[in-house]
Length: 389
Image (tube, rainbow, N blue to C red; front, side):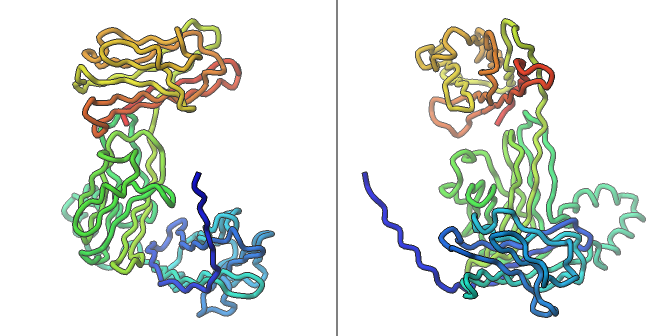
């Protein structure tokens, strides 16, 4: 077994300024700051605004927030994650945005009075309806088409955009638009959290090799620099917050927008003691005769496998032996539902159905079923119908 030796050096780091756009009246915005603090004994972080007196916007120590020196302008409007100094995510949430909040904010990491890192975040709070927008709205009212155009331009005026989709939808559009002129050589990243890359666009082309494997073949970007960076996601199943970030050639953040995708999934309940329960999965798409259908639970145990026109019981986990059944001619009818016999508490899980093509994974269809127990009967389970992914 190879041993990896890691040497960590603590140095004073000064980072380039990043930029965040928000609008007057927005409920909140996030000022990003990250620094590896897990090896520090007694770290603290100070958010400040040098043009104010006192300049302190927010201060966090290991024992919690230290706000005695906080400028009154920010009283009750700032917060950080409770585990910020453990995870290194030192981002600051600022609520109830005002035009006067536009400024350069400094994130400083210290230990025993020594500054280890300093980074600046430029926050620009704009009028929700600047003069050109007001003029446009008047024109739209006169033309009696204001409703449609306002719907089209709504993503320009929201820092966190919300999108709803029904499970089973073929695709959903995650909007990311800006009125800021972006350089043509900018890099665009769509991510979930800090590490999962959903889509990457750089050097005038997509970069599929940088994608997380779960999203390969499932994304498409409009690529309309400088203004429209919206992403199309095929077969959505998971509720997540997607972040669209634009970087300059030097790696500085030029723009960041978040889209909260909520996927609505219907539910089916089953009582304890029933003979069987069905996890439904239906599709109208044509399935090749050599397709492989695989049902898995949340522990990655194989529940049922159908391949080469027949069930494959030898691939099942032992707890599901002789307890599962699929319909006949399933590839012709598109009914890939799974019948689970004698369901109990132990079967409460997230079940995933995946359909593979013989020539690869590019057009895989996936469905999930999420069971929960009833409040009134702990031995019963709630099953969520499967949907395309």
